Image 1 (cartoon, one colour):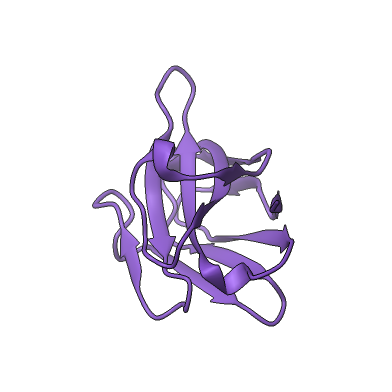
Image 2: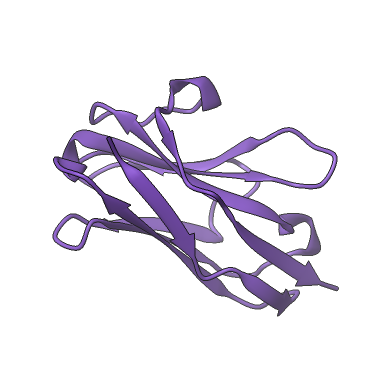
Length: 124
């Protein structure tokens, strides 16, 4: 069993930065690939990016590539999402998720555990 708690959301102006953090409880954290997803009002949940169990590989959606960076600290059981050059279209509820196994997953259905989400709002 893995429990995930996100933090760090808030309101920021366009062009600004935010850093989200996801704290995981449970054993064998490094055996889980981690992902960040978001859901904007009226839209489906979408994949933002993911990181492998070891932290050696990352993958990002085209919409955030070059602006967002995912990192993980296996000693602290945390996964961070650094978001730079934020745009109003980045406004959404952001979730972290854990998938059993070390390989990055891209689909919602492939993740086993989810946090409650943290709101990010970007004003123009």
